[in-house]
Image (cartoon, rainbow, N blue to C red; front, side, top):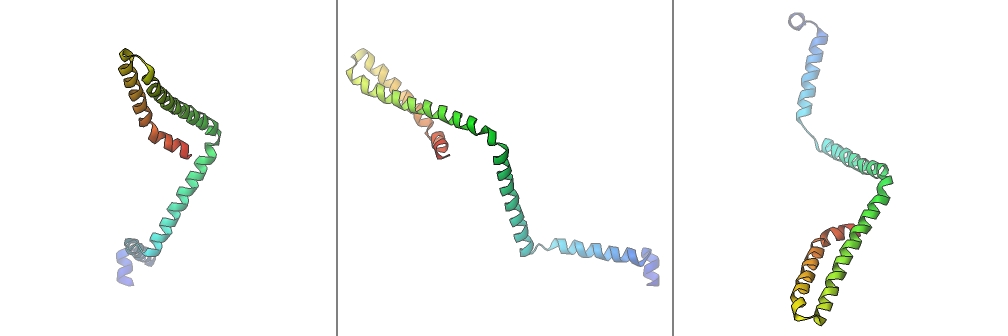
Length: 124
């Protein structure tokens, strides 16, 4: 070790350099065990984040329910008004019939555009 010791300073420096090179080569190979361990850790972190979010937003449940109820009432009223206008148009004068029918169609289309959001709200 005389010549190498003089080149690199000491045996400890050489051991540290060899250890660093070994760790570098080890880091280049990503084994299946390491992949599985990392994936499990990521899933665990994601689950704990969701649990923390639910715990921290617990006070907002009443507000969420109120907003969902209001949106549901608006959606339901739009369908009821549209259906009511469709039924009432049968007994109206010819002068009003086309205007009321167009209103019923317009309101019904807007209610239909809310249906996707309503299904999400109802599912919760």
